[in-house]
Length: 138
Image 1 (cartoon, rainbow, N blue to C red):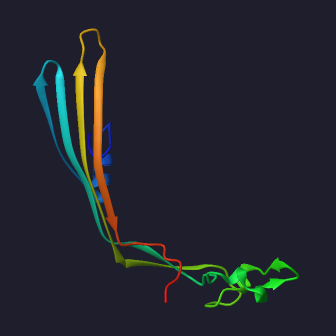
Image 2 (image 1 turned 90 degrees about the horizontal axis):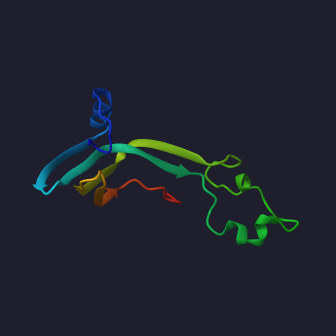
Image 3 (image 1 turned 90 degrees about the vertical axis):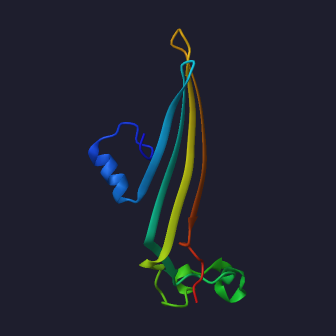
């Protein structure tokens, strides 16, 4: 199995490699119709796309009495301060974020005589990244 692909072919493996997936694994028969599998899966992305939201409504704007008209909330586009009268604006930048994903996948398979199979799986993984959807940017 390559990075979660159960039916491998050349194009799907190539796609995963182009997206930064890496895998190394070991499968070992330990006797008594039992197989143990351990694999590492990882992906590393540098200069990933990051979304920087702009023109947000300031926190607490609807709590102010000046932003109510006849007891109803004013349209959010009238409360935006960076680009007046416009909706939310997002800037996309491919230069700031770094993303890492690392996982250890293990499995134990035991086949009984009448076709019954016992299968146990465990995965320990961690993802780290610097991309964020911050509410405000100065």
